[in-house]
Image (tube, rainbow, N blue to C red):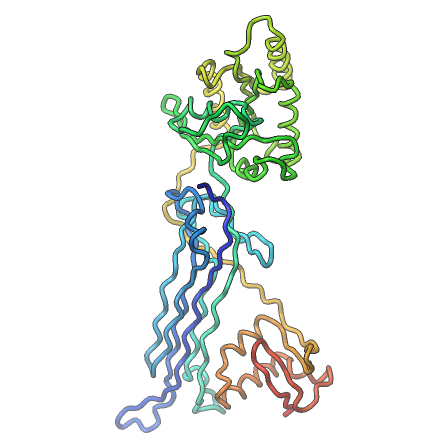
Length: 427
């Protein structure tokens, strides 16, 4: 079964809480606070692996979670948790389903992307010593981890893509040129999943992909081919296979134009890729027949347009070598051979601080929104009076308290920040 899409939830670990502790040592009566920091929560990292071919593993496991960091104990720092490495096929594109934006494109073996960063460890009371707070009796809780529901979309990595109508002979051609053994039948839509094969020509080789046949309206979701149009985006060269002896006796010239139009409407950039045309099944055409006239007509037209065109037969293995030499030459002109790194530094999503705001709460009172404020509250020990007072001073320095005053907040009004509820106090 070929799986090229999956919806997966990734959850990174929360940071461990900092400790409240004081130095205790003989002959040191005023050792002072020395509470250690909590450990960092584990990241969730996606890594491209060339050994994987589909997203089938994600059909059975839809959630990946990292462990939280350990809490600090006394002056001993909490242990940071290990990162969770999730392997995906090379060519996987990651989308954020909530923001509807592309997060990463893992198109090289070993490429890594931190889809969820683990929360940092909370700071111990050692960090809160000041000239007016010499004995802080509170510490910081660990930062919460992240949750991302992502859509994984696989775009096959192939050098050459075969396009054409159903039953044009693409699978037969792939089987004739490589060791791939795709299912082949004498009826349309035999191919329902992309097939890959390695084609060798002398000391040269490249990966060829046989795409399910396109039909008119494929770009709009008609037929089978529309689900696999995106796989063509990765290819460097396209081979347009034209059936010169269609079983429905349709016009090969019109069929050629139909596929070219679908490709252009789908993506101008993909349509502009270098193209080689194979006029297929010439072993079924008799000399002097109307089919032979159409073959010559199409060949002359394409040659006038500067498109390399070859006549051959995948089933009979006729006329294929000249086409392959042209494909290899075009590939070499397209790009130099790139070495595949076995390891690349992990990249992560950029954190966006969208600021904060105060809005009326639906149930009465006020609601403070904003990622930064929400994280501050979650990292505060709300059961500790000193910790809550410190939070109040931080919010006051940010201007949140002043904003509540401007909006007319009264004493004891409810103020909601995430899951926490406070009573407004205008000290």
